[in-house]
Every structure is written in C-alpha cells, then in structure tokens.
Length: 264
Image 1 (cartoon, rainbow, N blue to C red):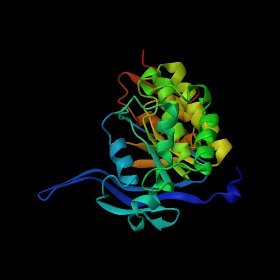
Image 2: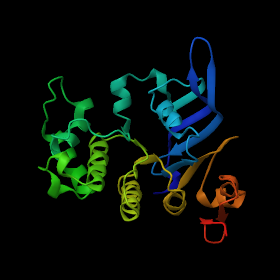
Image 3: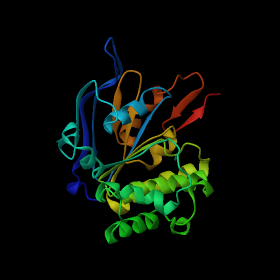
C-alpha cells in the first residue's frame, strides 16, 4: 500500500495505563505515544507481566486510561458509542469460546452484530461479508463444523474471520498464537500479514513471538520496564531496543541474525 494514502487509524497521546481505586493508583506504563497507520501490521511485544494486555484493554476501551488520550480515526475514543466503536475496531481476545456448540458459520456471523437488528437477522450483505471472511482465512470447508471439533489453529482462524466479517478499519488481537505449535504460530502471523496486504486493514497483535514479529511486522511497539517505544523493526534494532529487553545472563539479541539466542 502506498504510504501517501495512509491515514492514522489509531494513536495514543501521552497515555498512562494501569489501575485506579478509591485509595490508590497503580501505573503500569506511562508516556505512551504512537500511531497506527492504515495497512500496517503492528506487533506489541515485551516480557511477561510488563502490561501488554493492560495496554490493549485500554486501547479497546475495556478499561479507562489513567490519563492521556486515544484517538480512533481522529476522534476521541470516549466520544464513540459502543456500536460506533464496533464498526471501526474489532477485537480477538485470548479467552476460549464459551459455547463451542455453535457452528463456524454462527461464530463468524456474530461479527455482523453491529449491523443487524435486535433479532440478529442476517441479510444478503451480511452473508456476503461472512463468506468473504471465510474465503480470506481459507476455512470455507469448516463452515458447518461445530467449534468443539476444531483444532486450536482452526479455531484461531475462525476468530480472525469473525473480526473480518465485522468489517472494521482496525483489528486488535491479544496473543493470537497462544496454544499453537511453531508451524501454526508462523501460519497465523503470515495470515495476518497477508490480510493487511490484501484488505488494507490495520492489525495490532500482542505476542511473545518477538523473533517472528521482527520478521513479519511493519511496525512494533516494545514495552520495557522504563518506556514504551515504537518504530519499524529495523529502526528498533539499530537503536538497540532488543538488546536490553531481557536480562543478559541467559539470552542475548544478535543484530546480525535479527533474533535471540541462548547465551553460551
């Protein structure tokens, strides 16, 4: 996609995220500034417990920011109604599907909820969007299967298809490669990369697969103990961002191979 035509889909302006009670406030990350442009695949990475899920919950409006501003297509996130947000941003979380007795078609059809009436009746355009989403994720053959019959990799594709059927500018996924083996981790992230290229949508995902994110992402957001940094993988490597991501007693980052290796 031409950079000239890219517009900013989401941006965080001096964002502070964490938890607030009547008695206290816990800051998880502060001074967060980044922007996600149309047609970018963006990986959010950091060590366990650094606050990736907290940041995603804040960006999606599930919890409030401690301070700062989130803009969605240039509009303050808090100015959107729930239905308006659902037409711009779709979210795929790590929680397992509660009702696995639903068919693949029925799960994907849930993505059309922001556009249907209160009865959830599907119209011609809804069926077209559902079928397109299945085609884009190559799961047409699973259409009538129950979700309990699917492998973890197949189920993840179904959830991505549901987000595609929702037809939003931005798709946010929380650790989409959890429970997958290495082959299917690569397959899932390659799918996201191809979807960005084919649809022009912006996709933000959190992951522990830092090596894969470096290879596949247009941009990365790196959460460390002291700051949150964003940029292209190449720029972050040149800045030395990954060299200090983990304690260096066991793992080191190799700038030449662009991946982590066990320290001898």
